[in-house]
Amino acid sequence: LIDTPGHIDFTVEVERAVRVLDGAVLIVDAVAGAQAQTETVWRQARRHGVPAVAFVNKMDREGADWESAASSLATRLQLRPLRLQLPLYEPAGTADGAQHFVGAVDLVSGVAMRWRPRGAQLGTGSRSEVCDLELTAAAAAACEAVSSAGLPLLQAEGEAAVCEAAEEARAALVEEVAELDPDGEVADLFLAEEAVPAATLAAAIRQLALCSAAVPTLCGASLRGVGVEPLLDAVAAYLPSAEERPAPLLSPAGGGGGEGGGGGGGG
Image (tube, rainbow, N blue to C red):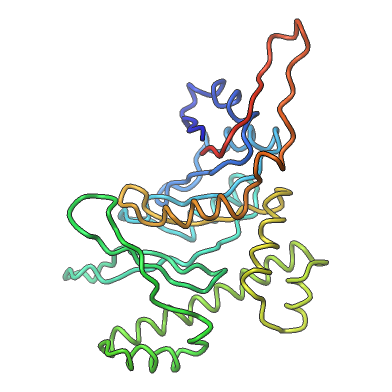
């Protein structure tokens, strides 16, 4: 695992690291989005053909905007972000009606995850499944299912809204994958208006990531430990292993030295 600094003063060091990576994690601020130096690092990764996943971090900050940050990857870096998650929010309990970031829905598997704080210490949240899209295909059914579990009606309605929004986001993800791979199985299922299994969708996303046709994009708040496990799962699921990547080539003798060795994921 190589953690490369993003500051412009370390451009040369990043170049040396990127050329030996198997895959990269592109980290973007949820408030600021992709910045000028992000473009520089991304060009370096593209030059060496490094597949990547993106992580929109600091979703718990005031002014965080998931859609804007993900869109900045397309506008500034000219890449195709595949939004694999839908952020989850809960009321903060303040007079202004503010909400705070608590987790995300995995649009591939259809499982929503919340991180509950176990104490005052940062990064000690616990993850729990709260919604299965296959069991709550309609908002009314979701409301009824959650209500039957003994939850307050307001919370049940909230869960129903989350499921409905997640279904719409998953449909958009399936359509985008089908557009990027028109000859694939996902496209066939989409055109036939049939359900796309999670395993089929994940396999198609992996192929798009490996050929750099798209960048799987997730969200979280790493300082609080929110969304870190799904990011690591995405690295394992969508980025290549060392055996799937060509070995870095040494420079010819007298060519100014060379870089060799293997690498892991970098951000």
